Image (cartoon, rainbow, N blue to C red):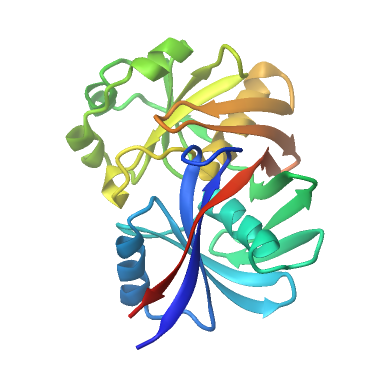
Length: 261
């Protein structure tokens, strides 16, 4: 029987029970995939982040949803950096992570944290006929990157979507995002991933790796404010810099515990 400490961090928020929660576990080594998946299912959060230290402020990082491993997760990376800074006492300007999406980094400046992601400029595709059934409205256009992104006319349209989870799960992509210009922020979005065990994600960093390059070109600026209009809500200031997207936000710890198995 082994014991492992974990921390639950709400990312991209400055208050508890908002933003997107992630469980963060620092391990001596990665267990087999089946065990990591069971741990993620036991946490039953949108993401569990598993870290193994390489050297000071440098870690290998993997992300699991209750449905399986994913190639990129932004909020759990921010949560991992936040936990290492605040719970594990790492002293550094930034912490690097080796992942399936290359080297990522989380930096700290005062009470704000930055997340460095690869930009994922989506390409326009034909509107799939099944998409209107999935979200109950015909999008202005559909984009494809890591997953599909449907562009809607207004923030009200984004908030009004009542997703058909059966139809979304039948789509040939693991995740579906929707977006529009915002009222109080430059852009708003939502994301659905029932295939991964996440009906609606509270805040999605990988989605913003697609949103920021798209809206930067559309709006003619590289600095963008973003709100993900989930029930919990999540906020970030965003910057497009070359082929990288930087997300700036906060995080809070909501739980500390020990898993025994």
